[in-house]
Length: 566
Image (tube, helix red, strand yellow):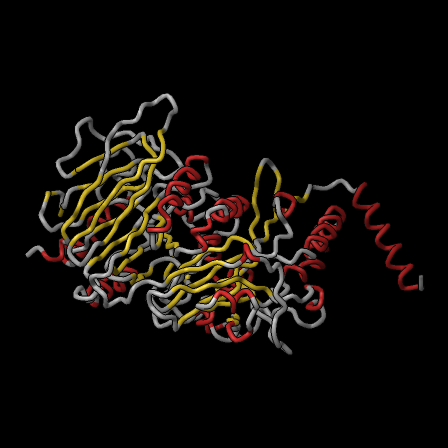
């Protein structure tokens, strides 16, 4: 042992001894709670760009196993000197991720053999190829402050695909030791990332969000890169998907599932297992908000995606999400909002996310939060899938007539070609029509009816999917509280996992209610048989109490496309 090695050993002994005897607040790392820390790639799920017939977005998470050692050393130092430990070990938290991507081909053998001809990597200089994100948050739980650092969230965008075609893929991560980045290759957090804060929607550089975004997005180091070494390679890591029919094929047949208020409960798993039984016939899934019920405990998001990992069909069918009030996760200390939602998903984005901070008391109230600053990103978007055009809105961002969301929605509705996309759906977490006691007078549903219902009636929207109420409801065709032939059909599908017990507002249902239930879990299935006819079914999966007997209420209907009513 030379003199320098001796000094390092002596210093480590001193630090460890001091950490044991120093009396200070406990620092708890989120990594101690993760069951499979060194899993290299997990939480695989799909989305797409606006046209699902020619694109796919493949998302997964990864974390270098050796960063665990860095965090353990950091925790030991924090027991001795919290401030210096944060300063000294922040270097590990700002490290660049390993490069990531996918091997993708119509030929499974190409994927099995890791053909570099079919390798698609995220390019840090081109947002159209995808992004890698990571974020941190402080969790306060039982008088403990838990410093949580997410895994790297990889989102790989693939375009130029052929419609109605089966592709095979596997996720890859570049096999380079994390420690190779310590000397001189750390992300320049004050670098030229200004373009991210500008898009065609205006707004310019937002200095209030700069530190938030710096900690939220990691960039990719690309110097001297050739080809990655594939890690964790096995047959179980190869998945497949089928692109949608062409968007101009108005008579193509598609089927999709709608779930809401899911969470991570046994009833959630029952709903997903039920969808899995139908998954061969299902093309995609819409989740109408209140996704994980983490409520700021970001470890629960990991548990949610662990649950998703158990369902292979999420690796094969796109998942499209809407924001629920439990997905806002306003941080009382920093004012940050939508942190997990914006980082863990990549929906068909209109532009870079512009997210403000929670500042008012109502911004932290799950019932009153409204007109929060969240434009673009995963906030609101649309996608085409075969004969359908699907719009997803954010009930908690501003949708008044002067807002960006409203102006985009008007433009979107006006430009849809119903000749090639005869079916039009809207997903928004808060329902406009509500037969239940709760949330009827909240600001979101009141203003949705005031500002958006006229648009939905004018442009002959077929279905409006919501959650929020832990129950089930389907309306008749309705417009402005009157049963109207050709009006939209409103559905509440908040019975997929969290609860199924919302009390009714009145003993007798309103005239516009077709069916309602508040004790049964389930999900909705919609099949567009052709341009004029849809088959709708409510699939029941369980009951709120084991002692309850089935209500024997079924809901299956064939619906004629309202667009053709004149």
